[in-house]
Image 1: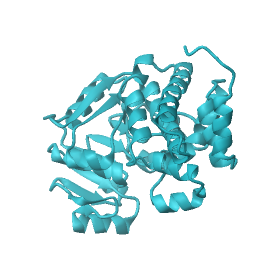
Image 2 (image 1 turned 180 degrees about the horizontal axis):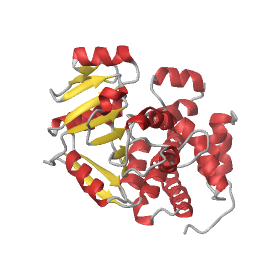
Image 3 (image 1 turned 90 degrees about the vertical axis):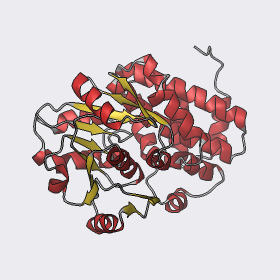
Amino acid sequence: MSNIQSIAVLGAGSYGTALAILLAKNGHQVNLWARNSEQAQLMQAARLNSQYLPDIAFPDTLSVTSDIKVALFKVDIILIAVPSHAFHGCLELCKPYLSEQSQLVWASKGLDPETGDLLGNVLQQELDFKVPHAILSGPTFAKEMAVGMPTAITLASQNKKLRKKFAKALHNDRFRVYLSKDIIGVQIGGAVKNVVAIGAGIADGLGFGANARTALITRGLAEMMRLGKALGGKRKTFTGMAGMGDLVLTCTDNQSRNRRFGMALGQGKARAKIEAEIGQVVEGVRNAKEVKMLSERHNVEMPICEAIYQVIYQGVDPKLVAHQLLTRDLKEES
């Protein structure tokens, strides 16, 4: 067990709650922050998150608050687990309580909604001092992680001390952490896989079958790697947990909100109705616009992600974009 005594987890959705439960079960004192004060009070009283993980009780070392000052008081590490579109706002809330001695990790998967920029760049632009930071990403469904099913994930940081310290805090006999220095590649993987998962769902919603789904995943990985390489990511990252691992998970299992959203689109349902039925943030919807901004800025061809953007934001018929993808000019695979 590491010498970490207190960790703040910011974001009480399913993923943030699951990470808080994991860390608390590992023996750490965890402050779970929820933006909504009523939600925080209900969770603290009931000792569970009845909205997202209703069957999983909180360990005794996990407490819930809606007061950001209380959540961050004398913690060793801050873990941000809010949706990517709320990342900037969460940083602004934290900033008065941060210093160069703070250590910050984020588990948000996506890009900045205004600029399509990497969240790591947003962090460095928002803070006028350097803070050791890391990103946590990989194939992890919240419920499976919270109940202790075997899981593996990637933790990336240029700071060796933080990388090892937080990996030790997370690691147990059911949760394995792989270390990386490639912060850029891990961020790209977490954003692009959400978009491709919507595409995989669309294909299945249209009844295209396993051949089409596999082709889409494979070529989606190629698009992820092209964008990652253009921004300085490392090839091996995209064949690891935060790349291929997360992509396969999100594209093939119906626990994925992105996949379920895509399936419903393929079946002809309206976007607003689908999002209401799912009842949680579907990250890939915003990511489709963000990835488009980023790929255009760096002149990276991403036809699958472009097609998914057209379906979501321009109302193009999914069958039409599928036809367009299949009838593109022939090319070498590599």
